Amino acid sequence: MIGEPAPAGLRCGFVALLGAPNSGKSTLVNALTGAKVSIVSPKVQTTRTRVLGIVMVGDRPDAAQVVLVDTPGIFAPKRRLDRAMIAAAWQGAADADLIGLLVDARKCERQTDSDTVRIIEGLLRNGRRAILLLNKIDLLKRDRLLAVADRMSGEGPFADIFMISALTGSGIGDFLDHCAARLPAGPHLFPEDQLSDMPERLLAAEITREKLYLNLHEELPYALTVETETWEEQDDGSVRIEQTVYVRRDSQKSIVLGKGGRQIGKIGAAARKELELLFDRRVHLFLFVKVRDRWQEDPARYRDWGLDYSA
Image 1 (cartoon, rainbow, N blue to C red):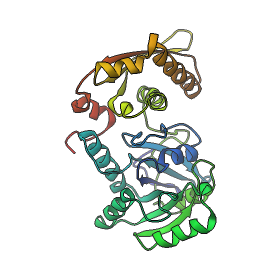
Image 2 (cartoon, rainbow, N blue to C red):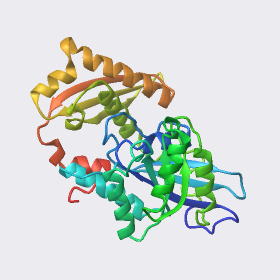
Image 3 (cartoon, rainbow, N blue to C red):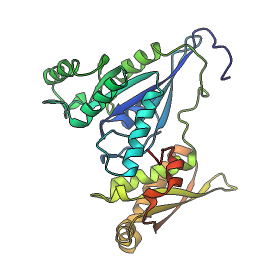
Image 4 (cartoon, rainbow, N blue to C red):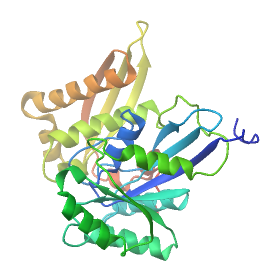
């Protein structure tokens, strides 16, 4: 139990993953945990809050519990939600035992992108060292990759460099072992079979939001949010879930619904299928679309996500 003396050899700690939007943090967390704990889409700013992925490394008496912290991408903020997301990312780093800076190696081939430069400057200001993770190495030739690693090694406070592909799994095991060996001695903070700390109601809403991101275009995904309104256990072991998709304008509502409701039907079917796989049970999912003009200014939304409204 938490608070008891740590058995010999046990280690536990937090590893925060920082990076520019779309650097691959959520894909890496999912790959390391072996499960879907963080949603993924090609669109930037998909992750809105800190998500924990919990991984056990090794066997007793030397087991390590690595708690991965998937943080929102860090970029130049424009809105209140942007500022709150970035504050959550930096808080995740401040609380962590180790920090991994995830970089899309392709975007840094000629020079380091501005968002990553901003993160490096933040690490330097806070006196923190980080593990540099050059991601998407499967998309860059080796000689070019080595050149990126050589240049970036002198640009920031990097303790180590790993070349990985979160998508294919290349190199991620070495990174995990490296972290596990460097965590402080201490008792495990979570049950050994737990993969995340995200409540099922919030995870269900995130899965639906992912499907909305994958099926909608342009700026519309950033104007919406999803809330799980009801969660009812059924006698046959299934669950009935009602969710509301909130958008800011009537025109956006029409786009989300689609002609004859076909768009929202397609999104709901995709979300239900994934939820049934995640929860290993039948799911009855009902989606509703409503207009809430200023949902991004509602403090309650920020509390639900664990974000600081005043950031």
